[in-house]
Amino acid sequence: MFPFRVSRLTGAILVAAMLATAGCSTPFGTPPATPQNIAQPAQMQPDARRIKHVVVIVQENRSVDNLFNGLPGADTVQSGKNSHGQTVQLVSTPLTAPYDLSHKHSAWVQDDANGVMDGFDTETENCYSKNSYKCPEADVASYGYVPRSDVQPYWDLAEQYTFGDRMFQTSQGPSFSAHQYIVSATSAISDRSDLKAAENPTDPQGRKRQGGCDSQSDTTVVTIDPKGNEGSAVFPCFVRDSIFRLMNVKNVSWHYYQEFKGSGEWHAVDALKPIWQSPSYENVIWPSSKVLKDVAAGQLSDVTFVTPSAQASDHPAKNNGTGPSWVASIVNAIGNSQYWNSTAIFVIWDDWGGWYDHVPPTIYNSFEDGFRVPLLVISPYAKQGHVSHVRYEFGSVLKFIEKTFDLGSLGRTDVRSHDLTDCFDFKRAPRPFTRIRTKYSASYFENQPINYDTPDDDY
Image (cartoon, rainbow, N blue to C red; front, side, top):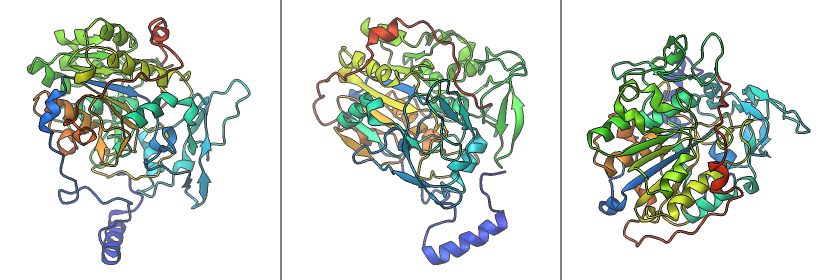
């Protein structure tokens, strides 16, 4: 069912009562999306044409309250509520803590709790501890935040450039669907279908690294319909539009970096059949670290998407703590290159990963929008030390690309999204780059063997 716990009749009565006593509020925590209450998308600043290169770095499974807790100027909290109305303190939790939390669509529904945001104690926990670290009890496992010392390069980037504390994961589920939204502004299984891919793909043999047109033939992904019903399963290879087709039409060069060849939950292009079966699929490059060599060799495309290895992904339970250095190494490579003065870098995390967050999303339909995830905007024109409270979603990144390169629109969530140019000041001279300090160097990542691990355990 649609992710509200009240019946339609009861909901209608509650809405009427609330509107009569409290103005425009609703019992769901946020007003339903209507043309009247959706903010109008920002207009691209004329001087934004100084941007000739856009880089989108995608990390994994963190909420704002979890990864940037206490960042000055950002809306974060030190405690949250559980489903019993009790206050739960957020506890310092290492980035490499050996446990993962459910982030299926059903977990999203439970966490959201009709916009009250108090269902995180109902999360399913998978503990992989093999040493002295003791995983927390499941009912408090979601209430954790990563200490600044574990992710210092992220904080340095946030404090030197722009941080967005109102970036929302557009989908309400795990990685596979989230990555489809990042490149297509939807996870619809075709341009004409109202069914959306909702979960991570799986096959009867439990094989890993599935998701895309290269998947094993018996692989399927569960879909969700407009009423919120999950059930119909389809092969995860979609005849659907994407930002890559728009770029191909306008001869805008692009690369998509991923850790290994073929299908995978984070390999969004592999699931786009029109691109997968076309010559432009050659723009998909592996391993992920090759982006560092390509920048150094003067081969940065107009638009670049970068997905990580499992170890550098920040994904709970499977990362080895190198994610902040990985991201900063890419930024450093661009910052010290010929491309710095013409580049905008966006760092996003694909889904909330089951971690607590206190800001309710706007509900547009049965699968949109999801919870907050962090956003970093890095550029010589990014506002310095700025925290943006403007509401963004994954379609915002696509809209920025569309406008920067005159691509037209995908006609999906990019239409309603703000285009992110309010994070920039294009009237100023480009700011010189200052290297971000990292624990691990670029050469460390360049010398790592390909990692074939698939961290997500939500099926």
